[in-house]
Structure formats: structure tokens, C-alpha cells
View 1 (cartoon, helix red, strand yellow):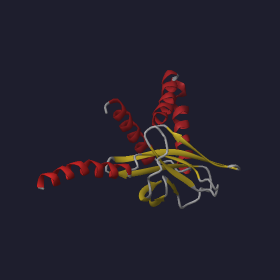
View 2 (cartoon, rainbow, N blue to C red):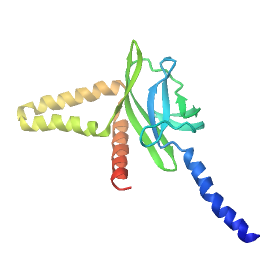
View 3 (tube, helix red, strand yellow):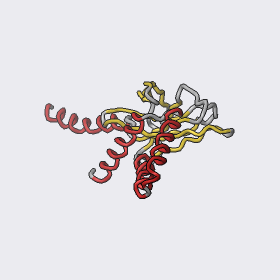
View 4 (cartoon, rainbow, N blue to C red):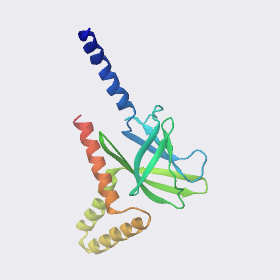
Length: 182
């Protein structure tokens, strides 16, 4: 009798851990809400970008530094605040597997919102190109530095700050190391 109980527990334990893993959000994408009310929809996905429909419940997210409890129904949650103007939006979720975040630039136009994911390597590549050009043409060094400072000030007014840049870089490099060394 006791041996059968151990076998039953040994059989059910992996199934219970699988059920808990299925409810975790490790990847997500941001899109415009279907009713086009200026709010963003966060869609839980797998690592290949396919939506996961079995995610339901309340999950903690950080959106531009503010904690938000988002209610997921069939893998989709709607942010509570509407986007009034084009802005940078950094969305982060933390679970047992670690922190998962992405940086987006949300274009606000007449036809609605258009979120564009910003890859972490662009945050390194673009300033590096400016500095390389400035280094090659030493007379342009001051102009290049002023352009970089101007870009930072403009983007800061749109919601991009150093914390979002560094977190995007960390998440990107961590994701790169996970794909190279699983």
C-alpha cells in the first residue's frame, strides 16, 4: 500500500510542476488593444512568439517603473492607462525564472498605436557608430557628443531613461547568453 502511494506521488509530482510552469509568463509582446482605445495589450507568448492561451489570472508587471497588477484572460491583459502621445515604454515581468523585460517605442498616430520593439543591440550600436565617426574625424568629436546628448535629452522627455536602457541591455545580453549556453 505504501509503495503504491510513493509511486502515485512520484507520477503526479512532475505533472504538478508542469502545471505550475505552464502558468508562468517568460515571454510577451506588446500590441495595441483591439478596441483601439489608446491602451496597450500585453500578450503572453512562448519563446518563438506564439500566443499562449492558457494564461489567466493576475500577474505583476512593471511599466515604466510603476507596478501594475494586470489581469490576464486567455493570455491577454490590457494596461490600465491610455497612451496620450508617442513614448518609450519599458515593460518588465519577474517570476521564478528571473526578470523578463522589453523596451518599446509606441507611435501614436491617427490610426492608433503602433508599438515597435527596440532590440538591445541598437542601444549599443547607434552610439558606437556616432563615436566611431567622431573618432575618425576628430573635428567632429564635439558635434557627435552634442548630438548624442541631444538624442538622450529628447528621448528622456519621451520616457527613456538610463535605467530603462541598462535594463534592456541586461535582459538582451542575458537572453543572448541563454540561447548560446542553454
